[in-house]
Image 1 (cartoon, rainbow, N blue to C red):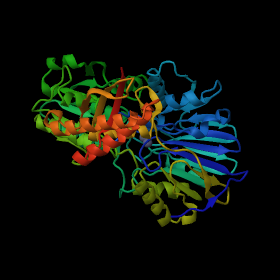
Image 2: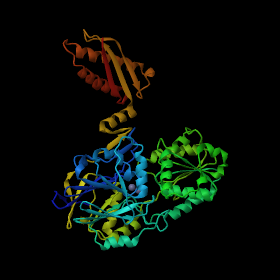
Image 3: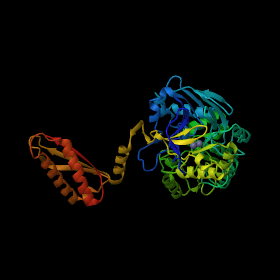
Image 4: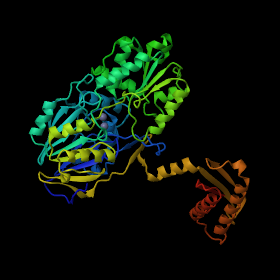
Length: 565
Ligand SMILES: [Zn+2]
Ligand SMILES: [Zn+2]
């Protein structure tokens, strides 16, 4: 699929996806009309396994930095981190007193709770919106409508703009039996279609899967079966934000007279918020803490915890690696991974799973039974959505590139002309008029912004590359003392290395390396006059680097320290 390119016209609507395309995560989209910008969702993405030390990746908001005054407001679809997680980080750039922010009650609760972790960051007022709420932001009129997902209080957006109506589906599935939520309002969706939709942006996560997603009721049945055969404790790992799954596990536990111990900070806080707002129902006596587990027989205990994605610091990992003070894996435990694996996390999940199996517990994963997230509609639902909304232009969003393609193919098959479908990468800009859709030549910056501890964006490609070198080939530090007067090396250079070769068994290599170091330095300082030490260090890095590579086929990071005495 090839899209027409264009340059900006005066009366078009621009759509600028800053994340969420070609990836599962960091959803953030801008709608721009004349000078005004509306922001939809501000999500984060969890890092891949080849990004050592990185906590999150967030959208690149270079495009917005100088446009703070033009931002009308932010609307949030639902409380998942791939839609809200980068909010505190980007607020520091776009915060202003009159910034308007809208979210459903549960989404708002989760955002507010998370902001407590960000002391000193701005805290804008967040206005609650619900199914049917209508708001005006500049030239945009937004109507919120409920959508089923695996977290309650999820809202799609119907946006009237000067060029035409836009539908943003949010993450969705059609569920006849949702948990703590009403089923999809098909009448409403059809009525949007009747009001004429110029463009639809629709969730593509399930676009490669045939059929219909499972109803939460069917997932409940599968979970019940696991609980029925479990003889000992059940340890259920899921996402802290999968409120529906959490509710199901609590309900089944209550039915089976099991107490529930919640482990993991984010899980605890989310359950607290959801309980307060009435999205999680549980008896007061159901919950116990990890110290109380020993007071109950194994068959009366459920441990509900974070870590289904193999996250290193999550509760399940601490339990599996025997670091948890009160919970250890036991032979008759049943461990459930109840969330599908996010692309990129497969290996970490495998490691935890194997560790648990090694300790003798039973493991259920979604591949064996459908107890996974299942929050995204599959082909049947996506098709039904397109048929109801009947958009003129179609823009598949939210997913890996193959998912976007599959969604675009589906739209084509059911009659949307190819020229009316846009397939984009993050940062590309779509220009929409009532007659035409095209991609502009201009692009918004979209490269990764990585969050590492408290630093935002200070870890760039170079830092990441260094971490790779350190991780794969180690480091090699040369400490040399030179005579200030003569520039000659005094004694023998010290060598410290980590993760490179075992020095005690590499005596010859070390001896040869020292010889070279001395000759490189003496040569560089030999001519007398002022010595350019940064040149000497470069020479050491390059030449010793080459020498070590020749000898070992490894490229450690070579650092040199020169001390003049
Ligand atoms: Zn979601
Ligand atoms: Zn999502």
